[in-house]
Structures are given as structure tokens and as C-alpha cells.
Length: 160
Image (cartoon, rainbow, N blue to C red):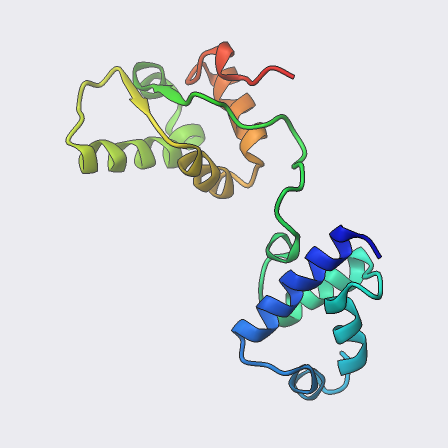
């Protein structure tokens, strides 16, 4: 198996261990649904796990499937913006049902910083990742959406 399978296995092992489960504990807790030998082979990267089985394991562990995927994967959509400067004036002009979460997030950041210039607000990539979870999009997809709304300038889109 390749490096990806081993990295995926490492994530599976880490989640299992965070929950205080041994391989046999997984088998017991699942009522035999997940055999210790099978889960162990997934964790070592010796056995390929199907998407369906991965989704079922994620459900069993009570975590999003994305938590089980190794870092370094390329998400669907374009990459997130490299420079993230939100146009607050444009944000205020948009319907609250569209931009409510972003507007509340921006207001919280302004409050923390004591920054009330009201024109623009710089945010970090981590902020964009958090917002993308709220909007149920990848960071790249959210970047595209914010550009479409006029909240980010078109040059915020990374070049391919």
C-alpha cells in the first residue's frame, strides 16, 4: 500500500486511541461489526478501505469523514485566497440570510481587535477555514462565493 493508505491508517489509529479504545475494544463496542484484525489492517495501511467502510467507521467513531482523511489532500474547488481582506461596506449591502454567519464572524473579530474602521477587515486563512465549515463549503469554494458577492476582490482568487 502507498503512503496515502498509511497516512489514512495513522488517522484511524489516532481517532481510536483518542477514544481510549484498543482494537479489541472496537470489536466489542461494535458488537463484532468491526473485527480487530480488519481495523488493525486498515490502520497499518495493509488493507484498502472503501469509501463506504470509511464513512461507516467515521459514523462508529462519531467523527466527520474529513477527520479521518490525511492532511495534504487537495480539496475540491480552487484553493483559498492568499490575501483575505473583506470589504465590510459591501458585506453590509448584502442580504442577512446570505451573509449572516460572515457578518457575525467579522463583527466578533472587529470587537476583539477594537477595529471599527468599517471599510475593510483582514482575516487569516484559519478564519476562512472556520467560515467554510459554517457555510459547508471548501475554503476555495467559499473564496469564490465571497468574490461573487463582491466581499473579496477578484485578485483574491489564487492563480493556477
